[in-house]
Image 1 (spheres, rainbow, N blue to C red):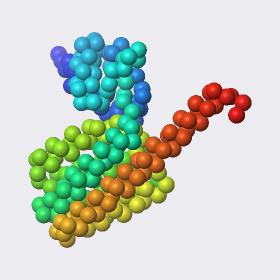
Image 2 (image 1 turned 120 degrees about the horizontal axis):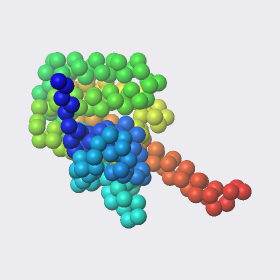
Image 3 (image 1 turned 135 degrees about the vertical axis):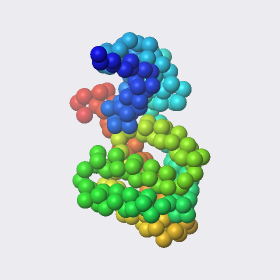
Length: 230
């Protein structure tokens, strides 16, 4: 006799979180209990539990007349997020230079080498970029840095599409990854932190460019709606 495991609120939470990460759910999108219950073929109870947790984490917010919505981060919130990311990623890289094992460094080098062959595949790079940074986080061998970065990563889900698609950002980012690994391999904590911080500042700039372009498109669409003759 086959037993099917009951779908829990945690399962639904993970599924919705992955939808945020992948971009299937975008900032401004509505999220309803009924549609999710239908999508996953379950009752509303586990869906309600998942939405409640996501709201507590700030990954969803309740808006009057709209219900649960994926929040849109403003420029100030994005800047605050990247300021914290620069501090934590820099510290993680510095610690990795002290504590990373040879095997961990080898994994980082393999990721960078594979990414260099896949510059045109932005979606793949977005996934491996996350793996690369997580490999540094783990190589720091500090549970508290790991916890702080995991919490920050949750908020990063609200940023929307990857910034690697901006101009030559993917090529530049991979080059910076290579420099970070080189510093870690040399056991140069100071250089590893400096390069990691520079890397995150580059990501921040690319993100602001994406947001600026999005705002221009939104303004143009609004103007066109008001005056279709334009």
